[in-house]
Amino acid sequence: MTSRCCSVCGSQCADVEGNKCGSCHAVYYCSGACRDEDWIRVGDLAAHSHCLLCHRLQTYMGLEGELANLPFSFANETTKSDFLVDPFLQKQGLLNQGAWVVERMGIMQDPYTAAKRVGSFNEDCIVLPVESTTLDDPITQTAGTPSSWADYYSLRGFQLDSPIAILLHWPLTVFHIIQHRVHIDYPELGSITERKLIVVDIIGVSLETELLPLFRELSALLPMCEFDIHMYGAEVPWCRDGLVYKQGRLSIKVVRGLYHKVVSHDRKTTVAIAFHVGLYVFKTWKKTLDKLQSANIPTYFTEYGHKTYEDSRSAAEGMGFKHMSEPAINPFRSPLRIYQSATCLPWYRNAILFCLKNS
Ligand SMILES: [Zn+2]
Ligand SMILES: [Zn+2]
Image 1 (cartoon, protein in one colour):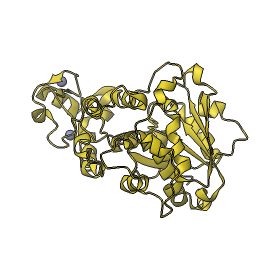
Image 2 (cartoon, protein in one colour; image 1 turned 90 degrees about the horizontal axis):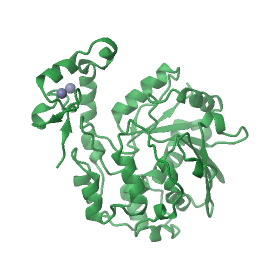
Image 3 (cartoon, protein in one colour; image 1 turned 45 degrees about the vertical axis):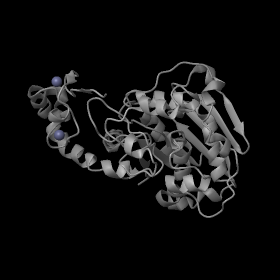
Image 4 (cartoon, helix red, strand yellow; image 1 turned 90 degrees about the vertical axis):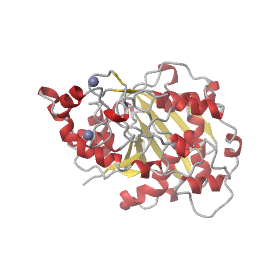
């Protein structure tokens, strides 16, 4: 049973369908009074007046079907606007199990607020589901590289009822950027997968540092490449600062601190990626983006949905970065729709991809 809250006063909405905005169908109100208050806001909130947003939200709601278009047998359930993660994981026998704990925590928190978790590196956290044994096998099939979940599942021999995509959207998003995006968005670089060493900086991490073994899948998909990945985050717990995870041709180092302050000067980064970047949340992004742009590093971002993409883009413009690319729907987004109590915009983890262009 899901509950909805008024997007103005936060109180519980009784008649859920009857209390949505009649035009965009994206936000909930407890009463006509709250709806009227939101329509034209005054003072500092004037720019957030719903009359200015409604049309955009209507457009984003129109993309609901496209975002829900995933091949999994469970997708009908997991892409509904009232989808709740716990009953689903419970049914799958995954609630409170291994890496699923970490992913669930990320889904449950309000995506606007960064994860705040202090803990020590715990080997228990990296227990993977049954498919992980298959993941240790090298990929022998040589035909093509996967460009969708359906391709990937068939390459790996997973059934479409396997929930492993819920964890693998992290490494597969990195793979997709390296394999399918960089040569299009930064044609001057050519195909980076022909390089022997790929140096990746993942910026602004929090819980991702507990999912390091998942990134092994990058080496399986790109067996000719060696990976040197650094993950940076101001919220990385002290006890994980400097942690190194090595597996075959993959090496990941966790670094606590703001990227522009801690990245070493001689690092030859091939590509930088920030998951769920939220450029509108932290002012420190300006210095990080300055650093990446002055070093000519291809830089990719993900967002939960088109609304947060627009918010990040306008924040970037406000910081002087005028050349953000258009949003692209990530084929390797998480199949779990994120439940939000006051809106029903279609949000998924790593749903939208975009990049910082030089001109
Ligand atoms: Zn209200
Ligand atoms: Zn509306």
